[in-house]
Image (tube, rainbow, N blue to C red; front, side, top):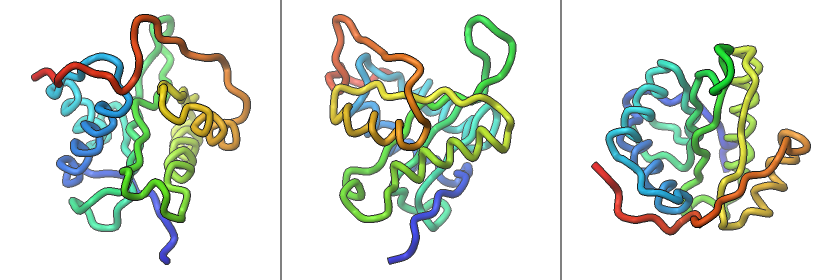
Length: 163
């Protein structure tokens, strides 16, 4: 088996990235996603305008096995830039396959943080397989800096997509 490699996504990966992004929202979102906003964020990051995407898939424009969507922007209390993970997702077809795709995508985020000299904000917001995801992140990033709570909401139970 070939080693799993993460490459920087490009505009030609848009359709496959949208497939993964929609699947990710169906699995993990807690409010209805807006397809226009989702497409805008995906495209901007694919062309590296205020973001970057790491993808697993050898052929540009071909099937993607997984991806991580990273945004570059500021947090609400500062003008300093940070690298913020918006989504990390592995297609269910590849989750049990050898190669550690989720780990490779998380490592891509660390590499981008180092390369850009930006702090990375990344976390788990899911009610599905949460403990396993937290263990993966702790092995990759160290101890967490907090936790996240949802009240009157649960991930993966989303009304129909907007727009």
